[in-house]
Length: 139
Image (cartoon, rainbow, N blue to C red; front, side, top):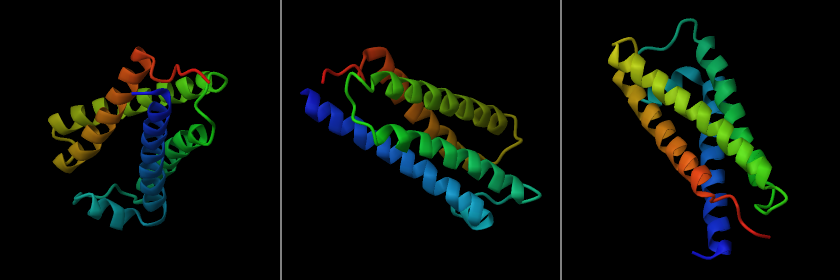
């Protein structure tokens, strides 16, 4: 794959991840019951404002992805991209591990597995990209 194609794919991944979190976060903030039902969850946290609080965090993660996506992926911006990929991969890894543990312990509904798998998959892509130097592209 040539550098131009790599940049396009990485930017598409970045925008996809950012928009998925930003939209989910907004939905959790403004329509938490509906969003949790859409996710297949039968039990909403009580008080429901806890779901909105989590939504603010999810929105923030999405905006971090989009913040990087607005910068060109080049040598000058490489450190910023790598920092955001490392931070968001760490957050996603922690969320995936936490959810898996809680599901296995029977404290969270199995429907949360979709979130754990999604976050875990994106984290794996990012960790692989960081270790293989996908973001180290020449201008």
